Image (cartoon, rainbow, N blue to C red; front, side):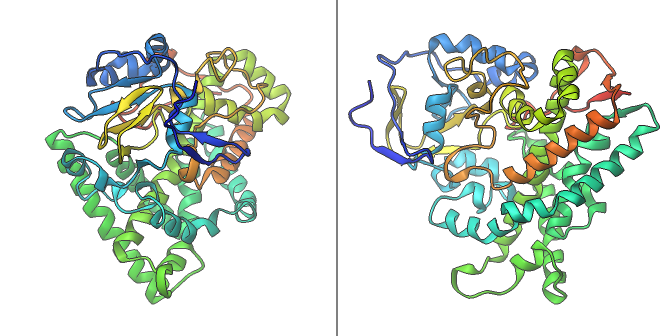
Length: 429
């Protein structure tokens, strides 16, 4: 029965309004999950098994992350989807605690960019970059993406072995986003290090120091590049965004640096981990790998299945309650932090049949790997196109590709990170 105090939400795109406060009878009151739950090696290795153990206790759980702050974790599809489109859950860090503002510090990944802003400022910022990600613009990149993909496979092919992340999954999207932005591709190794540093939310003294150093390096890098493009514009995105405009079409220097940082990080992290996680899923499910080789026309649907089954983001980025509200009947006090687990939502048995089974023939469903609502990933069409080309090319040109280690020897990135990705993916062919 819906909460009678719930307000109708924004249209979801299917003609229905999203409910913000769906209630599931009498809400359970589980104890607060310690931060160790998110830091434990077994969680980092397989969060889905851990979430399955929580489902019987309810879809919303208090969690001690960050420590000392009122925080809640949403682990089901229905309430997670509603939360992602609820305007009472803001993205701007000004709604967060002093602790979170300290955590962000000068981090340009948390600055005033699209991901960390709310309408109307979010609407303005998104409009300024949306032209670069229209379906027509993305489709025009297809020949170049195929060319980059083939070149990377050429380099691996004769060696017989490779780290599919270092040699393929990261270089492909980094090269594409660098060319789209107008950033020298030879700097891509720096971008990967910067990205890995900025996306781990740690208050450890050394981590904070390192993050501040990286933030300073990024700001110096982009300030210099912006000045160069303003002096000598090119046909690239940095030049277009840095060009002077009238009124609200102008980006301030901090906004421009924050925007470029976001596009650079988001433009390769999601796709690289989609390719890595998807290939690992195939290599550990030989029946699905064989089926996809026999029926390459299934690749677009298979990519959607990889996104659902083991997507590149374990949790959505931070949201802050601007007023008292309820999610699944659980009271969420104003100023609380809300985490929505995209990974748990993708394995929700109420939303997907037999969710722990990889099935490349599964009809595309309503997974939330790219988010939902006004913050739905702007680069999703580009990520999908890159992934389609990557999987088709790898399966066609490397027919004997296989995992070159035992699955249990693989390690996953960052504890308590939003990112779901491997540190390395050794393969042979």
